[in-house]
Amino acid sequence: MTAAPASPLPPPPAPAAAREPIFHVRDLARVYGEGTAAVTALRGVDLDLFRGELIVLLGASGSGKSTLLNQLGGLDSPTHGTLFYRGWNLGTADEAGLTHFRRDAVGFVFQAYNLIPSLTARENVALITEICRDPMAPEDALELVGLTPRMDHFPAQLSGGEQQRVAIARAIAKRPEVLLCDEPTGALDVHTGITVLEAIERINRDLGTLAVIITHNAILADMADRVFTLSDGRIINARTNARRGSVRDLAW
Image 1: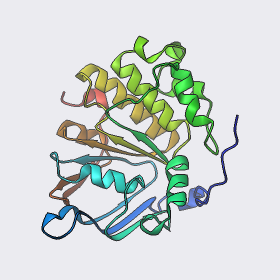
Image 2: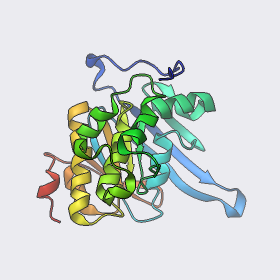
Image 3: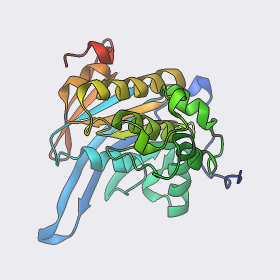
Image 4: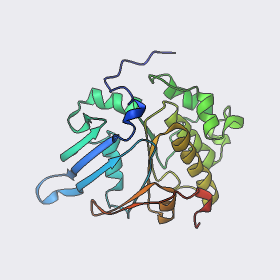
């Protein structure tokens, strides 16, 4: 196995720092283009996100949800405002620093599974574990999403929900502090989507991972610790649930 290059990221916080925010965001804005062609995707977003939270971002298409997720994941840089990951300014980080951040601290789950068809589930996950600083074994990651019996199957031999769970296992095998999920059940039926969301729930609970889920489905709001609703690039509503609901108990 090839050793991962040294990372410039700060070490994980000690337990006493658990309530310090992982992300500290103030007046965050993202504008694409210039002049009359300029499009403002985010405008004045403020939020703090903490370890172990499950966050749901709600909003219609074009509301700014994916732009905000891309900012949190270091896939894009703010036009202005501040975006700190554990005291480190992502907005001024160079590309090498952002690459380390994405590799070591963040797991991404998208609507598309993006699995390599010629590799088994185990091998797809192993691609990530070979480049990370403190990975779990691919087998352990697949066990967390309930795929131990299917780990030597190829993507074409797996259902859509199983492929998405392989994608989740691949994302969490690096032991990320943050799991960012962009419509992870958008291409799945309700039953299969519930299974995928339960896998995300388990990872959030068992590993203490901050999980952020983008969805247009308001039903998912009840599974979250906090819910942020976006419209026209702004957070127009923030809600804290007194108690998180189980995925299977939601009003499907």
